Image 1 (cartoon, rainbow, N blue to C red):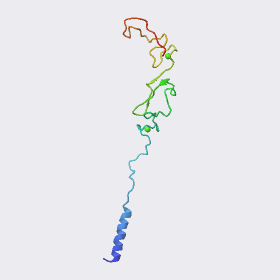
Image 2: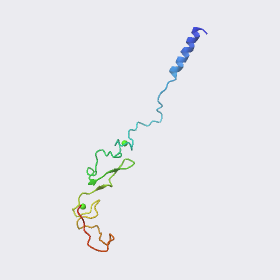
Image 3: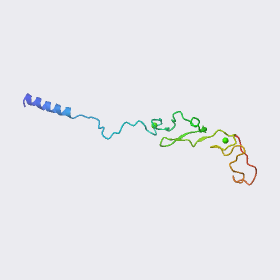
Image 4: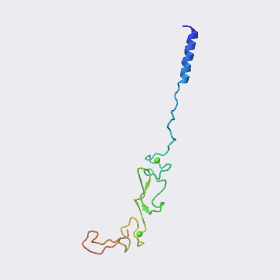
Length: 122
Ligand SMILES: [Ca+2]
Ligand SMILES: [Ca+2]
């Protein structure tokens, strides 16, 4: 085989190597998603992520005190919040009673045989 033939073969092989290259297949990619619910970091449209509430508390949400929970879909669950207005005479969220307002309960309704039901300020 002549040197010219070898050069031609090398040229063709190098040309093929240049034509065949690896590149990213970006078809089907809608966009880069940075939100990942469950990674423990509140991002994007997430209200929370695990223990990351972005600084929100029951108090900042105007729901008294207590503990916020985060759902599996990264939404805040405020069912653990309760009012701290014990003593205002009105039963608020998280209160069984308030002063004279016993919420219609009495000792018999609570399973006792008798007595006078009161409300503790705790
Ligand atoms: Ca997240
Ligand atoms: Ca109250």
